[in-house]
Image 1 (cartoon, helix red, strand yellow):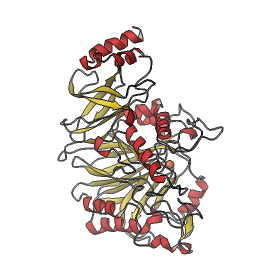
Image 2 (cartoon, helix red, strand yellow; image 1 turned 90 degrees about the vertical axis):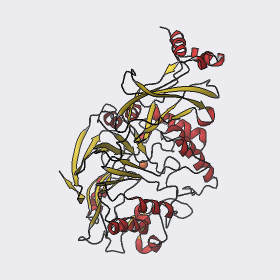
Image 3 (cartoon, protein in one colour; image 1 turned 60 degrees about the vertical axis):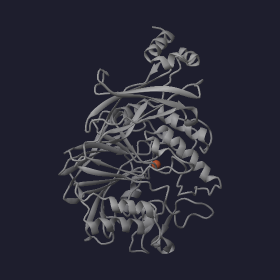
Image 4 (tube, protein in one colour; image 1 turned 45 degrees about the horizontal axis):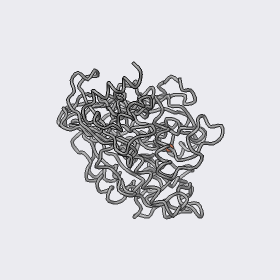
Length: 507
Ligand SMILES: [Fe+2]
């Protein structure tokens, strides 16, 4: 069937509302323009629903386009249990955020969209188990998918992992222009800072079929980091102290919401968007999702004349230890402290970066040397968080992170300088999909100063794959060659954590 006849037939199936609009018919006849070129996604699963996402693409889209969605209990859509209509609006980049409700807990569904005579690819998604139901949880964590330094082989393998949830922990895009000779080029020739530029950058990333497959395989839980806006930004301060940074953050957050499966209630207002949330996965785990960018104090001891990060010695920067400093903002610190689950065996803390203390020099010499953008730059904030875990005897805390483009497994301790200090939580900071790290020799040298770090590899790209039940967590370090789009995947290491005993053990 030729494209225009096929489009007309699909349109006929689409109902009277579509057929009645001649302008839409005209667009629909241009059915060779792909309208779902960025794929589909689902996210924010809970026990009775989730968010279904797509964004219409191609030239000549009307201001407002009706989009029909359906959700079925089977892949063939014989048993459709929910459907509805949304409007994709030009002002929100023709994105769609549908929110089916009243679904059965703890089961799989399939979903698709229809608009302008075309049908989207089909995605697979699920609800969370009922809060009182026994459950297991299979998931990956990963982050940092810089387009121009590698290929998305890791996503092809994530899509095959039989997961309940994909956790993406920040740097979905990078705002930089590509250098000459890059592995592949991003669009545009300058550093992204306007709404149209951010939108184009998301479209570039989302054009990748392997990433689309990973979105289609399971619902995602997402937090952002800095590169969705600007390298090393802090609160309302950009790295270059640019005076218009609040407008830049507003544009960046808007484009983020437009391209991610967040609910309508999270739609940003100006430069504000709430991504902080919490999810109970049956009786197994409570998952806390944090935002360490929007509410933080600015970094201590920056390089002269600019904002952003630095690497400095504690003795030269006593501000490090200012008790008032916070990475999460005091309100979010309080929200987290009040929301630890004392009954479920596991508390998973999905956030942006490495929490374990990581000194680049011997702490015996002047207190050590630290990167100011991570938790080390906000040590009093970390002390309060870990102190609460000890005080309230919070069970099964597993801190999950990204940002540093390296795989780290660490013991989080009440006192990192005391080898006998109690281990209060287990940390898995996962590597990047593509983004590059430091030479391995530097990480190896620094590990001598940080014995609580059990594993540290900057030369691995990929993801960490977790299998969680009420007694044990099992983690595999899954590694690809990001320079080879056809790369296979290997398991480079395995660790386990017993629910009753914090700290990861090689297995
Ligand atoms: Fe990154």
